[in-house]
Length: 341
Image (cartoon, rainbow, N blue to C red; front, side, top):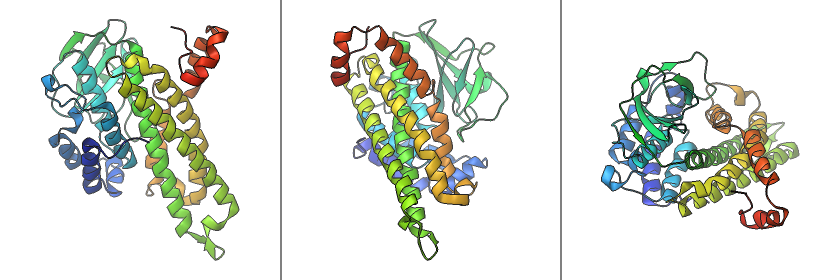
């Protein structure tokens, strides 16, 4: 299980409980940004949790911060908390000063990249694997492509070709190290959102009655939610394994890449398996704008595609397995050490 009992996680939980009630994601979707929520997170220093003390943060352990990320996803957080954590981690690893305000991140593909919270973050930390560099841009200086984002978090493709960075620096981070962090963060968020949507569904079918008895008494409903509960448990375990691997490999995040990818694959399949029954057991209510469910399922669908969906990563792992010597396969199945370097 993800540790939600540390100081960072407990502080985040209190802030989200006090300032992110069920109305907040709805108001944010309508264009009312929850500035008080972000201000409380920033005043407590939480976006700087992974930043070293020398750069103004407090260098918290990975596993403790993952607990805060869990509670943010559980609350359907409409502010870029996890994204700022990732951006500040990138900047800190490159020795770039951390800017004030909310930030987001991007992995450059040519001159452009898909950027979450592009509409609300002040800055974006851009990782360019071709130059082994990290650059900090003002989000407003990049040009946005047209198109409506699936996620409520305004995931937008930005072009940086004409933008001038505020700062930039070389980095020794490999692309796999960056992917390991991002994929693990998304895995934790997805597992949390699945569990929150499951609890929402259980509460609904327990309260809603049809033909004189609660929906939860119908065998078909019980079967759907039993399958969803097993997928939720699998997602949580996969996210926990990835988070633990990253915590063990704090000095070299690339070592946690395989666990992060496996978690992304597993949870990507879980997303497909749970979102349909979640909406189905809610009936027509599950498809309405005013109900809470879509704040979780839309994010799940968007996070599933982060850096590639489960099919992309399955092919990547399969290609590496194909060149692994046969005598290493069983060792890999039991220890995770089967991938060829």
